[in-house]
Length: 172
Image 1 (cartoon, one colour):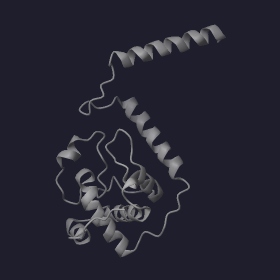
Image 2 (cartoon, rainbow, N blue to C red):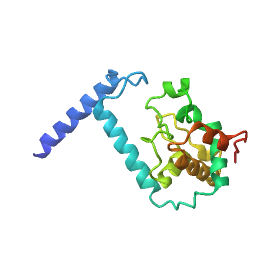
Image 3 (cartoon, rainbow, N blue to C red):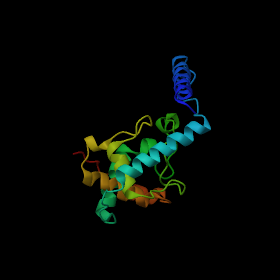
Image 4 (cartoon, rainbow, N blue to C red):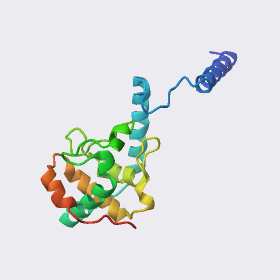
């Protein structure tokens, strides 16, 4: 391919892309699901971005009962409306979000990388409804959430209520 052909292809791509955007071909509505190729591309971008940015995070010990209990109390106050809790019916917020937030107590949505979970909770995710909790919580409080979420897979309602209890969530 010569330079002239390359420039023509680049200009046509720019024109077609501009028309695609200007004419509103892509429906940004949360009620309209992404095209399969768009979903795959977004998932790839998300996974690679999180992996690259979380790869050098040192994971502290996460197993202490107090850490898990504190994380459970914050989860109940800050996360359950979107990510649900054991035996919790879907909420208006959970149903209305697209993409759907993971439901951590179900086996198909378990935390597989604590560093990635920490990074995600701390920084949030654009265009998903996932807020950045790093602005209002310490790293310790975020690690407590990660510790709890790591324990949440397969948890029953009784255990959840015991951990989340009547405690209060804490802010920085």
